[in-house]
Each structure stands twice: as C-alpha cells, then as structure tokens.
Length: 171
Image (cartoon, rainbow, N blue to C red; front, side):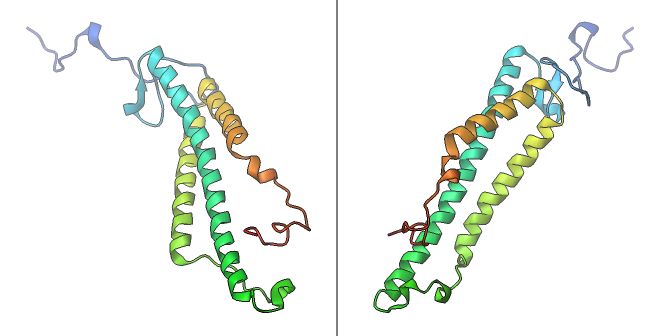
C-alpha cells in the first residue's frame, strides 16, 4: 500500500536552490531574487549572466538618454530666451537671465527616467547581494562597457569662451 501523499518519487525530486550569503561560484541549482528564477542548467546560467550584463549596459544607456533629455530641454529654454532677448541689449548680462525650471510634463518625463534607473539599480544591487562571483563580474563588466559606450559626454569641456561655455548651447 502506497502511503505517499505526493506524486513525486525519489528519482524525480527537484533540486533545491543553493543560497549563500558568502562569496560563491555556484552555476546550477541557484536562485536569483526568487524561487521562480531557479537556474537548472549551465545554459540557463549563461543566459542569466548575459542578461545581467545587458541590463547594466542598458542602465548606462538610459542614464545617457536622461542626460541628453536634460540638455535638450535646457537648450530649448535657452533658444526661447535668445528669441525673446534678440532685440534687447541684455544678452550679455548673465545675472538677468531667468532661472530655468522644467515644465511639469518635462519633469514628469525626467521622473520616469529616474524611476526606471532607481528600480533597475536596486534590482542589480539585490542580484549582487547573492555574492555569486559570476553575477558580480557581469555587473562590473557591464558597468565598464556601458560607461565606455555611453558616457563620453560627461567629460566634454566647452571652455569659457565658446557659446556652450557661456550657456548658449544652441548657438
């Protein structure tokens, strides 16, 4: 008489997730973030590593898009000021220029960028807290490649005498 209450036999018992709060190099039977993200094969693990790498690169690209959007709305504001002030002689008086504040819709778009960046970075932090060496190196290398591809704009120096250095980015 079979007294088992489950339908699984000893040969079909699913492997459990390996979780460690110490540095580890587990590749199979690991779970990231939840039990539903159970890695059961080396191929799935490689896919997870590539996915983490691409998420970090995409995060750096999103940061770049956010900076570009900020520049674009500032240039639009400065271009509208140039049109208003084209007839007056106050163009050289920097102290009289009004303070730039984005409109609600512009700030809403900026907030969407920020929310996606914040959420993605938080998920990546949780992935890093698995202390899996492969995941951590995918995060580090993804950050390197993403910054290499997307962050050259942060080192741009326009100088004081150029139009951009004077705040005239659209000139």
